[in-house]
Figure 1: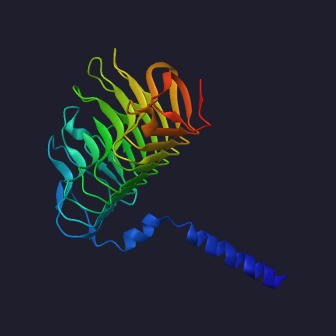
Figure 2: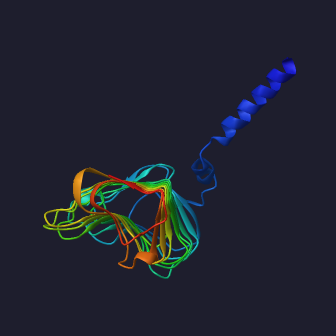
Length: 279
């Protein structure tokens, strides 16, 4: 009996150790702490936050990445831009179209024109972030071979002229939550997720897509060669727009196992591969 208890205790200890979040290990192996913003990253490596940081700049970039192979792990701390107001054009984290292998994880990003703005390149990973009250786009990722997963994007909108997007990405999109997309310009569309390139979206939950006037709501706006599987797209009341919108060529977008609630057109230009439900 004593041996059994000892083995059980050892198992519980190991289980507890395995539950330690990955960002804690990243923090302890961090190469550089970001103490203030705005800042420019010019050397490859791992960068972390040890406290919340904020800025009131109304244009430019809070964190600009000017090299490849950079990880930014915020360990749950926040990068804030709310002080710049609703006309801000500042990006929270920015990398231009030549960058490769940028990772952004475990961070809160609030109050920027674009929360995360990776303009191109390849091999980017955006995971486990919380983005809220960004003015135009929560997450923007262009380029090739990217992945965007397990992010929560809340309450995107407020810019006076632009369409609002929760996530706009050329990437595999997995297990993200987008809740609340609300442009303020007259007769403007609102998009939960907009996809570019041949990719897949699976396990995403989208709600609260609120266009203005004659604008349309799009839960997921898909690109050519896209597979949309097991996503949940919810409107609070009957909403004018498409739960899923393909490219116009039905065979180019494949839909399977999606749940779509209260959109005037549940699926537009999407080949039904079975298991989809709408009401």
